[in-house]
Image 1 (tube, helix red, strand yellow):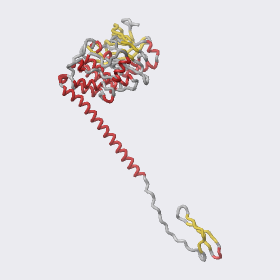
Image 2: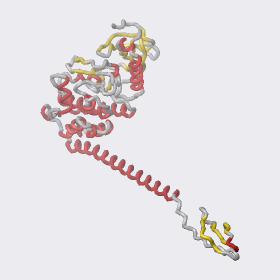
Image 3: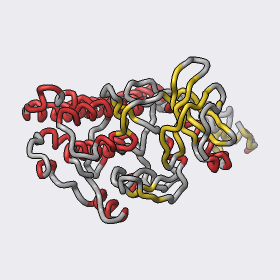
Image 4: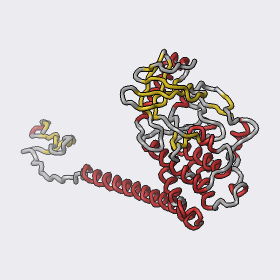
Length: 383
């Protein structure tokens, strides 16, 4: 149900409805306290009945609100209105990347510019331990001044498990709550580990980033089948067509960056969004036409991680040697030398007018001897 104009949600006065989607309705509003225009996304009332889900929603919104980066949508506030949760964010003027891609592929320079901004935003989020998990053109916004913003960090956790739909672009989606083993994301942009329901880390976002960059450069999706199952199969088993098939001007080095993002094995992708941004920075500007520069950029990130891996190995080796030497010194310190056997010599005087009997015994401490003596008259005594 739409909210009428002039309705107040706390200190925010609704001006007009500007859009709607599966996650709710979006309104332009005015912050009466600060006197600025904001965007308010009102989520379905049904979410308020699930206390755990609402709690997670607030946590995710707060996490996104902690991110302060020019390439991430700024979150200002989280609250509820008539039982419906809502999120207050900065108001953006422009269009989504999906709307920008409706006509054809983007020029390489423009695609690299957008990609670099996305990579910087992801790097900032990943440094805070936040993974987007649903990176796609619909969640990327291009402002009128050419700035790219990443939208909806963590909001996909609110979607009903098992829900499937086809958006206005015909892309099948399956966005579900992230219980262990559950799948979350949009089919066509999910990483292999996502579609398998495995745990994901920041490298899953890098795979999704690669799918978006591929689409910007080719004008078509990297993975798409006749059904969601076919698309999932392509993500797991197939590589997308060569970019040169649709864009003859694509530099092989740039394609190598895309391919590395789309590696099935996440260990073979860029290890971080920062490394990805470094490679893209070398491709920006006039360097786009230089294959040597592009290859050098990717090789530089490889070399960086090789050096890091070597340093890590050396660090572990040094730690192991230190531990072994410490244990050896401790063993020497606490080890007690076995006492040398002590030789004792003493004489046993023969009893006067007598002699020794058959009995002879050594005390346990080795310092005394007991024996039987036979005195005069054959009297036996113990000595």
